[in-house]
Image (cartoon, rainbow, N blue to C red; front, side, top):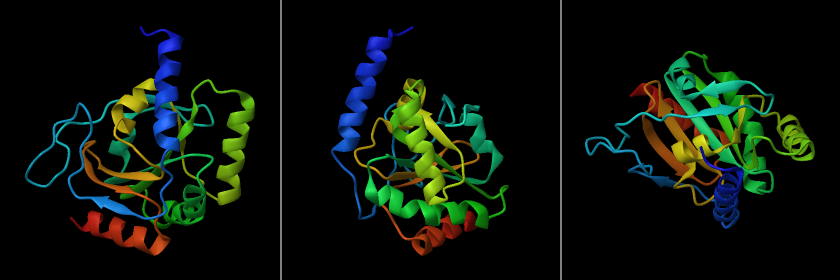
Length: 191
């Protein structure tokens, strides 16, 4: 088991990388990949499933099994300091409610608030979620979640689209308008 020092060093490095880029423009990466995950050359989707255990901002334990709850999961990695992230969250909150939960679900990952953070940081993140109407689960960063999804994240927001088998279908770096997200979600659900 790793010492708390190593975890916080890893968290500090992750935070430094993420603070280096807060992106307003979207950049669609056609061949998604992740460190430690093999990718399929046929459609660009990850052929290995994602594995993690985490806690939501309200204290609920979750695991990668949550991907099996919907045909498509949109995972939006954001930060409390990122204006483009916060600007798109009201639209994301509306999208979270617009689809049948068996078809689509939305999950947030708060990249700058770790599990076990001080109450002040948790309250600030909770206030932002409430203010933006982003009423969907938000996960707190931990080593398991970082290794599973965030090793290649270089800017926030970064958004993953993952199927019910835990395979990454697409990755988008940057914020987008609600209508652009709807088009992407609808296209992925039609496949």
